[in-house]
Length: 171
Image (cartoon, rainbow, N blue to C red; front, side, top):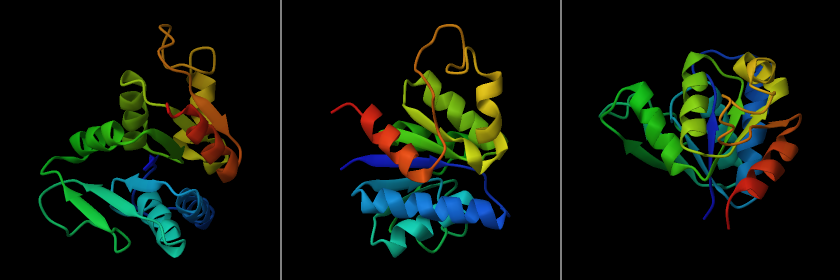
């Protein structure tokens, strides 16, 4: 099965971002893919909720050794025993493609890790946070450095983001 990782900030998020993240999770499930997230709150919880409402499968790659940070929509919790930043590397490596929804500092680190590991990333620009800013600071608007390792894609809608992500996954 195809595994789509959703990256975005944890904590309190706006109602608009909650709605976008939930729509993203739902669309991933409707396309028959598995949703992977960091398993906690914020964008991760909303995407997980959307996927569960569409009868999707949700995997949470959790920091630490306990379930206390896991959101209630996770079907398969994976305790990594690691801190947030190292947990994020497992999420990146376990995803066939990633979609950036909003994003704070941790999300920016996940974007960088995905780029370094040649993972396709689609950035949902209207979701705000770093997703709204990446194009402006990216090399030629499409890369994170002059090596042009892997092209970043930008989407304006959830469905467009999924179309792009699925088209970038190697068969």
